[in-house]
Length: 463
Image (cartoon, rainbow, N blue to C red; front, top):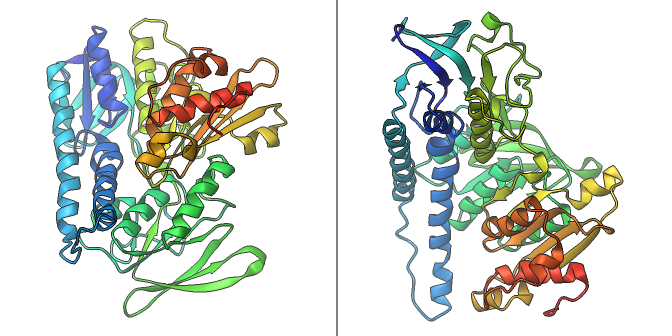
């Protein structure tokens, strides 16, 4: 292997790494991808894909109540969660193999091994082999954060990785962290009948999302029987014979002990930047992250970093786009600079779904940004009532003078799909009137998007 020098040596085969390899090949560059585990990274193997498979199956199981409403007798007693688990693993394995096939199709070698940068243009594997490249792209991803007192033991206290590997459901689960991952697992556990306690330290679930939008989700979770604590922190944990007692402290110092069978800690992720040889090439991290320039170049010439190892949002689609920009730059093209944080779609796949991009109302107030908002309830779109998914809203912020779209927030059925019409409008510099006057098929949920734009123009019809 040391006889071959690639144009790009990519460390990591997640959504940043494998996309970089394929894009490099498309641009005529020689590239290889080094991966110590399965291709696809966290996203395909212990993240996005298996979790969405679980969410789908949870919703299928929960939909039995819809059949019961028709008079159909449904016996749910035969649930075998190990089969649910197997389906999620089948989905992950299928797509991981698919990544392998895509790399082969594009003539990008996938090298198995744990890589470490050992010099300029040189990457060494644990077995002693060396791989040389004119450029090195670091895409080693991230891992679940650990907090003192709640260290993972993969039995009583688990991370998101452990939650995806459960083959048996607990009767009770305590979820520490009300971000996207915490809310998605709360949705899954609750749908399958587990008692859920969800704790978030900040003042609302999904702290990065618009609080008014999230309020719809919080009401939905509470209605479904989940116990939701916001502005609350976990102060300690004691193991018991059958599980654990978690002590929490809320507003005004109110304290409570919560009995649980399982503790799921999902308070964020940390970058995998240790032990990959950054010191050998003079790269220093900031809070564990690798500083990068406009095209994801590091402070050392010929070395690039993308995805979760940088300080950008820890999202698979962001990592993929960053890798495309970096490789296009390496190939001598003139790509757009760094991903615009205001143009990144966020998506949370609980029920109801939450999706957004750009400025939210909380941030606008804090930053003193002048804005107007337009909202439209899902119940105003006939399709939502017809399919019994009328819980939700579309909310758009726009400039009061120019009517430029500043941000959009959707909570409700298929929100993670609907958000892209608004994002396309934003990226194409369209105004609310452009969507407001465009014919939308009836009945569709996307009519709620159209009506929100009409509300921005002052003439919503169905409210």
